[in-house]
Amino acid sequence: MEDTICAVATALGTNAISIIRVSGDESIPVVNKIFKGKDLASVPTHTIWYGHIIDNDKIVDEVLVTVMKGPRSFTTEDVVEINCHGGIATTNKVLELLLRCGIRLAEPGEFTKRAFLNGRIDLLKAEGVMDLIEAKTEKERSLAINEVSGSVSKLIHNLREDIVSILTNIEVNIDYPEYYDIKEITNDEILPNLEKIKNRMKDILKKSEHGKIVKEGIKTSIVGRPNAGKSSLLNSLLEEEKAIVTDIPGTTRDIVEGTINLDGIILDMTDTAGIRKTEDKVEHIGVQRSLSMIEKSNLILFVLNNNEEVNEEEKEILKSLQGKNYIVVINKIDLKKKIDESIFDKEKIVHLSLLENKGLDELKEKIKEMFHLELLETSDFTYLSNARSIALLKKSMENIDKAIDGIQNGFSIDMIEIDIKEAWNNLGEIIGETYTEELIDQLFSQFCLGK
Image 1 (cartoon, rainbow, N blue to C red):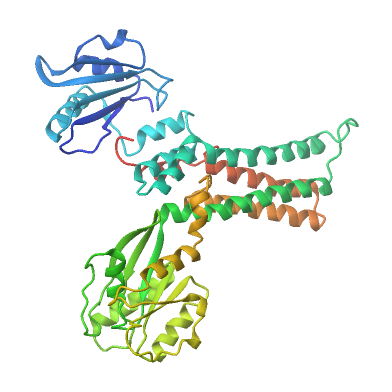
Image 2 (cartoon, helix red, strand yellow):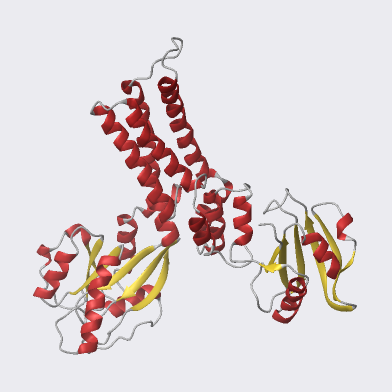
């Protein structure tokens, strides 16, 4: 963290402007060496200056240079941003000059990592920065901006403050039992406070399921036997000819993927090979992949043929879907009905005729209803959204559960304190109050270069 780093902060390509970001103690002196214009060492902070980047006496580009002196910068260090003309050759030449002056090329996410390590942002805000960059929908953007602004962090900070209040009272009672003016804290007094904290955690976790859906989308698999209309359904939902459609059973032998945007939620669609017994080795591999996709998916669209009876393989598929989110899609309702619908939960059935373009809207509504997507329309998006923080909050709630069980079973207060402390530590890991070097390196390595 003592050296000075630089990176291109905009996408390389043919652009109007490229921005090269420099951060560290040497950022102003080094940029000054290659900048012909105002002496950057003498300018006020948060100002922009016109000039030229030069290589010895040769002009490389006409630029605007922004100077932001620490601690009033993103990293809290001295930061200089060079706004040069876009284009790979020009951008790389300016970057090359900086590297030749001894500045190091930044690692992915290193600017945000420095902002975190220097105390400007916590870990949730840092993750929100990357989420904001990667947001594909308006809902993802709303979710990420709440992370960046600190609204989500506040939920965790408030929980930690309430827990530390309990811990402080316990510590005083344990360490200073001889003082009569200190109120004795009993298990019965701690219990209602712990239950309130647990209920707040449950509420955050419940809302955070929406956050995962917004951020990660709904992994959706289309399964069924050959020729039921799986590929046609995928093509209809994507509104493009993604999958090959023929009347020959076994045409789809591998996974075909695509995405749709359903009211701001991404559905990652997968068309799988038709599930049936087969002697064809290639098709058999496809069938096995189809079965494995059922286990990995958040939603399964089970496609059946309206004018065929349900066979044993389809009954086996139905058994494997129990306990999962699935919709029974009965296709080809334009043909004579032979299917017995009584074996299916009628609340999960949608009828389609892809040939006549009927039923797709009803299918989309069923998906929205199943995942309560209508609730997201009025949501404030203030909740956790990534697997790391959700897992840590669950661990913290388990610690509170253990403390509550300990009280109910008559454990001593110093034993109960151990679980409460662990809950506090796990919450601290969410926002980065406690962390390991390995965690920080792994998390920021996923960021893009220049951020």
